[in-house]
Image (cartoon, rainbow, N blue to C red; front, side):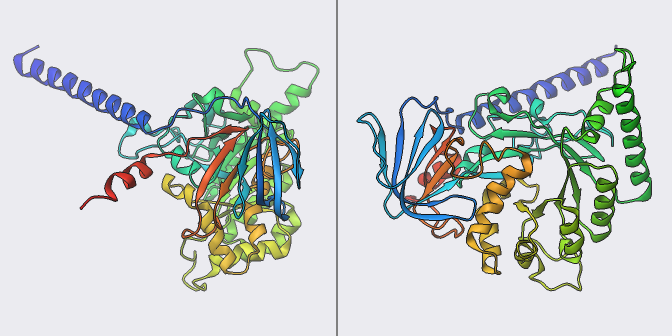
Length: 425
């Protein structure tokens, strides 16, 4: 190797070391901005005298809620407690079930400009076996900012290709992915193809999955040599063991997706669905729930009214379609879910239906409604307190939050920056 080549090789190694050092330092800086996860609840607590928003359409004025061992155990007036019970006097304040953010890249994408911090997608169109929980970063600096707005649970979902992979349901206060995992439910995520070749590819893979399922159900079964993890995922979806989230926006793609899901007898969820207002009857007849793109967007067509996205949640409610709201795939938007719902309220959606779209409906769509999503005896104590209406940016003020009864530290780097600079001359 000549001198020039040696210098170039050395420069390359130094550059790699420098990049590694920068990534390491950034990771340490992010870690310092993330509060330590809360310890397991070891003392009963009572939320006293607040307005309870149950998440299922009901509201109760001046009621108490008792939590023990991470569960809601009693709701009512004048609940008797022991002397060891911690009491929060919340007169004039509001208690809500924790918001559940659907179809997010929380924990998968941190800083787009730093490739090492982005792990939301894999190469290629066919990755049904890719699991989001494996790549999930429980120390993401984004997470504390979400909790401060009442977002306590999330579906972390991969992107890219046609078969994006398996999503994970996580609670947003954990040391590691294992602790963060809230449910074993892992839904298959599909990006609906935009062309005939992609649609042909998708159908062919499901045909293979159906053939594989027949092999599994046969007396011979599948040998170790014949096992295919990708086909096993498709077979489980075809068998009804896991739901299928289909990202589709346009009228044509929604119609195709509905027909395909019904033909294959899949447990489908329509995600995005910006053109849902054009086929409301068809969606209602299908029985598929909708994870609706948030209203902070322009119309899909230049011929549509400017407020079509704001009115769509109300139209879904009027049709009796189960729906939830999602934020655009940009980390900073997930914390704005309450304000997106607030915009829909301004265009006719009832306030409690808006809350349900962020809580109980989201839990139903994920299959965790027995664990979370509403204030009900026996469910996990995933809840938060706000001194004002959570749907208004000027009144929302989250003062307390709990996940499974563990009281959260609501500090985050944005609050720290605010406190640092608000007194600057």
